[in-house]
Amino acid sequence: MPPLDPRTQLSVRLGAILGKHRFDADPQAAIDELRSAAGPDVELLAEATGTWAGFYGGADATATLARALIERIEGAAEWVALGEQRRGGTHGTGGYVRPRLHELL
Image (cartoon, rainbow, N blue to C red):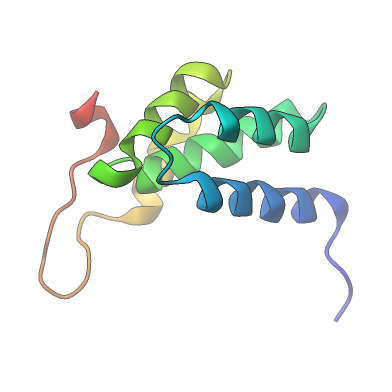
């Protein structure tokens, strides 16, 4: 299998940073680490953070980080709908419907 291209590697790294900080009470460390990792690739930073916020932002435990990403990362808000779409409307087999991020803001 060929190695991942640099942009895909960066996308994976950004995802790992988001996962590491998802439950932080203060999201500033996550924002700083994400910006440092992304460097000049602000488009990928916006895509990664916005889709993450849309996918995970409806849960109480991750809403703090999700809100901060949308407020502090330029362009992230444009990707929230895609993250929500990828998550879908139900969670698991019980039919639990998690609130969408915009319902919490």
